[in-house]
Image 1 (cartoon, rainbow, N blue to C red):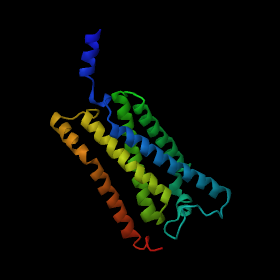
Image 2: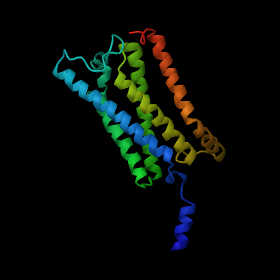
Image 3: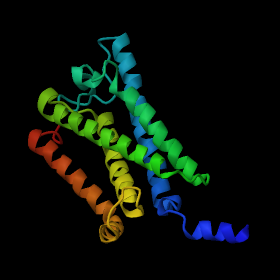
Image 4: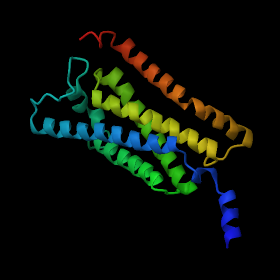
Length: 208
């Protein structure tokens, strides 16, 4: 019996040995994104209750959460997008806490999380484009959700690529093992691109 246990431990897939970085990423992103989505929901309820209510994140003509929350894009599926955020980031937080508690998720579970983050990152960037070029307003709480979603996607994707959850030739897998050391740089560059888009579209956003 002990021999079988040792052999099983030696041959355990890489994704069963989740590092501290992934655990912290999921917990922090889950908390930050969840709080932002929760506050958005509260502000949306207050705005529905009182059309004259000015949301706490409406700071100037550009940083105007009320305008964003009242737009059709804010209810893409017929209900407030923030409800999706609450559910999604609650799931991310739960997964992260599970890892801290010693959970070892199977490959299909990580694939499910990957699909979820792909949906999340695509949805977020659809909202980025809508905010910048259609609504032409920005929502601070929405931007916090963007900030939380990007590292979640990068972290989960690199984890799945380097651990073999997403099958790759060994050489490619080792490449992503090395690239994972620069995950922080990928996230910062991604942030910088979106910040540049904001400044180009709203050059006076920081002047109000």
